[in-house]
Image 1: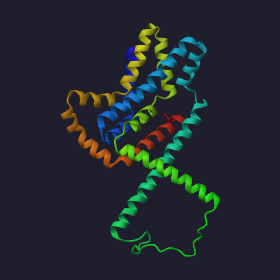
Image 2 (image 1 turned 90 degrees about the vertical axis):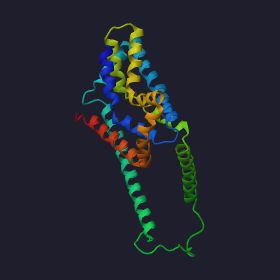
Image 3 (image 1 turned 60 degrees about the vertical axis):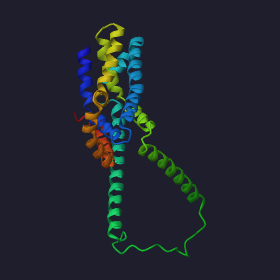
Image 4 (image 1 turned 30 degrees about the horizontal axis):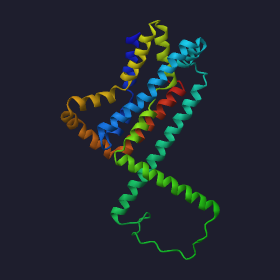
Amino acid sequence: MLHEVLALAVLVALNPVLLAFTLLVISRPRTVPNLLAFWLGSLMVNVPAFLIALLAMHLVPSFADFAHSLATPDPQTSVRPVQVASGVVALALATVMMVRLRMRDRARQLVAAGVGGDGSPALPEADDPNSVSRPRPLVAVAARVTSAVTRLAGRVRGAWDGGSLWPSLLMGMGYFASLPLIFLVGTIVVASGAPVAAQIGAVVAFVLVMLGALELALLGYVISPEKTQAVLKPVHDWSAANRQQILITLLLVIGIWQLVKGFAIL
């Protein structure tokens, strides 16, 4: 039983989504504390999720049948539309970010060249005397909402750039195993007939191995911080310079993978 669970965990550990998350965390200041915060956040979510599923499969036999059907869904299952929808949303977000990044780069090039957006020399904008100065109610509400969102985004960006730990903790809590994976592991463990303590140990071991990429980086910092820093500094510099591209790639991978699962292509 244990070797099956660990073999599955190794495959999950090679998930490009986790590798992309790891690169995002490494790109931040205070790399080691933020890696630790991400790891703890993932443990806080994943370990209880696996243990609760395992407990439910022991206490409620009908739940074990439901878990098995969800872990090995048929093409008509209701899970697939959710996977397709989440894949479309992820790809849409990636597309919006790519367009905004391209527009920002274009604007920087125009500013560096000293020309306006239409190719003419950039001139200071004059106030339009004919502009309407009386804001309409809906416009005023939209302006307040936009201002609040902008302030919130500024605070989040300041916390991210300043190396605060809570963004990494929240990212770690957002990286949780899918329900089919949780139930698949639970089905394998329960079907083994091993003692309950051994089943709990197998589930915890699965989660630890699943987060192996993070743990290897943290272990490297503990055993040989100088060598690890020398190895990861180029990775840190590159990921910090390409943070937006990494996030776009992460969304693309998630979106494509969800569509592949949703349409049962593989």
